[in-house]
Length: 156
Image (cartoon, rainbow, N blue to C red):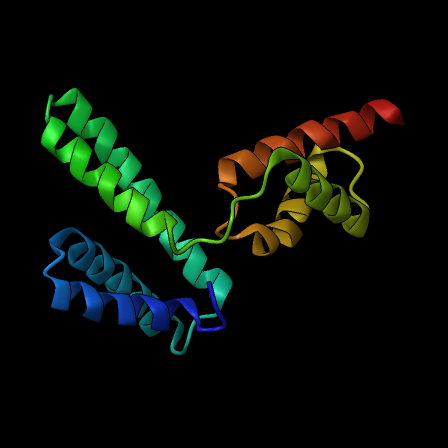
């Protein structure tokens, strides 16, 4: 994406979707902007890019859960709709981290915090999460931290 911030990009794309009569995109962008607006009200100020990415990630996670519910209910129409919304939302996120990039960031956070055992996982996660927001899911990050802290323990 260019230098324009993500929120402004969402707003511009919403206007374009309304002009084009693109109902899926309009609906999805409105929900995302609404979630961002609610978070700004809660924070009492503008959000930074990583926070916006985190909100988009949360919206995607919510739709993935909806897909599971819809599949159990046999509602393929809802599954397709949610998958399309996920595709729209993902287009606004930065490129996801691959395992190697994530491992590098985890190693840096472990070194920075001086963590030496799985008991220090919270400290590592506190340093790491702002750096990966919107680029990796929390479960994936915690799994990598747990794995690498376990290896650190074995090396001692």
